Image (cartoon, rainbow, N blue to C red; front, side, top):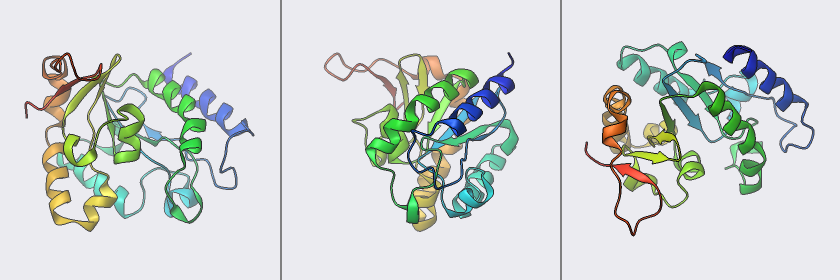
Length: 203
């Protein structure tokens, strides 16, 4: 089975799972290249995402597109999704139990795509991989979590509200090609007293 076929089968399975929360909203599975080097992961779909059944298509998505294009990439070169695959009502933050319910599907999605770098956008997505991390401190640092390289970034919605956040996000985003190319040497071990995660702040 190809990656595309595997993703389609996973999406069908997810759509049929009646035990998942938020089923009153549309399913927003994800889109992009199944062979993407970078996989961007947000927290949950918003109003426009729910309408179009596509991730990151509102103002925050337009900024993400602009940042991707700024690297000389195209949106279809990467993969974009969320942890929670359906919109929480009134765009509230996803609840811990909602994240937990959808997390197994995200894990399988990541396994199928096998990106070189996972780039969580915002604290909810970051804390899925790095529960003790703080977005203000750890944005733009490279971590190794198990066999995955994780590069947290500010959520583009937050960058729309703050000039300083946009500046920091843009700077971290522009380092993505170097992170992909040198991820193994950049993810240097942390001190023995730290959690069993490897990180880099060499940039």
